[in-house]
Image 1: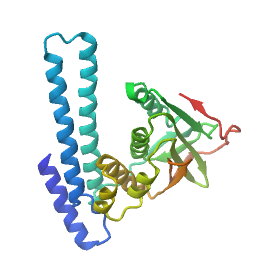
Image 2: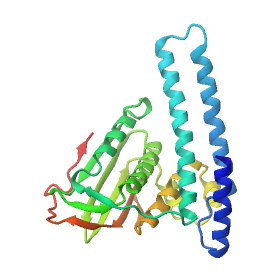
Image 3: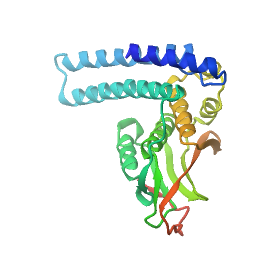
Length: 269
């Protein structure tokens, strides 16, 4: 993995020389230091919980809890490095959109099932997932669904991190050959998300908000949206909740779009 990071850093350095405005996440020392700290923290947790699982007198309930904590730490480490490396690869210019035909009326079903599982875990039980869909007919479009899902997943994880109770709303609508997705929450992360979304200097932003995971998540989301030739913006939801929208152009494969008369209806999952 270290060799892969080194190779990406070399390519990024060459690209930055030719483009002074290029994103500098791969060469941001605060990001790298933060990732090192996050990795050490989670590795220490894995070692500690592994030790507790093996101690004499540990019952089955405790073992299950420790096992879940170990799995969570592993997922955090993998997710952090995946987001960092994928964002760095995009910044080198070695990625392109991969379009495929998708049905709009159920495009988020699998992703919402995944989010439902996340919310069923202990610390997230006070958060309600709300799904919104304004597409009534069986419309088909060409879209890079894998990358779109990656953006939504990152935005959802950020909302989940900042929302201890309340709701997270995920939805989308189609208008003027553009597909707009949004993730809205009632949490506390608006100002931090806004900082990272509009940051031109990650070192400075991380000095203000010491949250490496959120910085990497949002940076990857921005890079993916740019790759898809889309746009992204953030609004405040209530006092401190965040509402992040992103729009991408799509090509219709099957016409006959009808807007659901219950455009603003909500489904709690």
